[in-house]
Length: 50
Image (cartoon, helix red, strand yellow):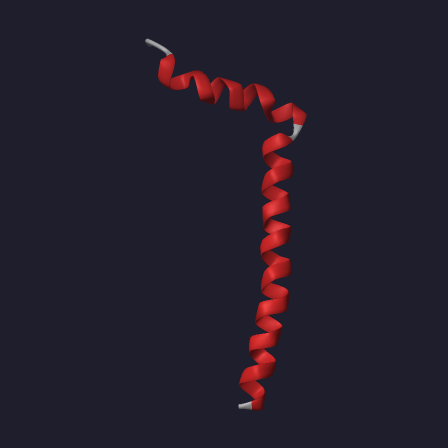
């Protein structure tokens, strides 16, 4: 039981750190100024009549 508790505590702590890091990386990727043109073009794609 002691080993389960230590593994669970490790997973909860570092799992949270891992998901926060991934969230911040995706946020930085999405809001990076050089990517704005590509995202604007992708946003207008359904409205084009090609």
